[in-house]
Image (cartoon, rainbow, N blue to C red):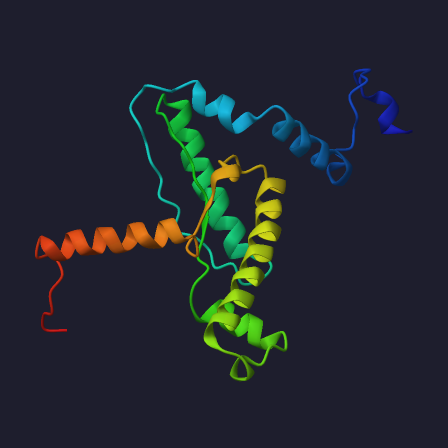
Length: 181
């Protein structure tokens, strides 16, 4: 006896296979075309704000599970707060300074000792921009909704200037001091 014939299965046009590798890019494209981030944000405009400061990943290579877990958790928190009536802008960012990017550039074959510092920094900045674009596409593929058009990167001069202004204000208020360690 074929037990399958004994089951009363509903007749449906719904596909029995998820087929995500083919469908998922279409979902992502539809979200971007419909500007879902701004639609979600605008529904709570003028209400109490919830601001999630994105501790940025380094822009020094391909995304890994840590990047994905970190960004998806932030996305879930922002969506949760938004669904609870808070105005929840989410501005993603990238850390583009420091040793991880310099090492990635050096490991790609660039001889930093054969050039001046400004030239090496310019190469590092171009490398970081490429990594940002690549990681951003990966986060979009995960359907993380964020203000991708207005991201921040630590190499942006206006951001650096603002950090110096804040540090100077802290120094004027006596908040910067040398203690025991």
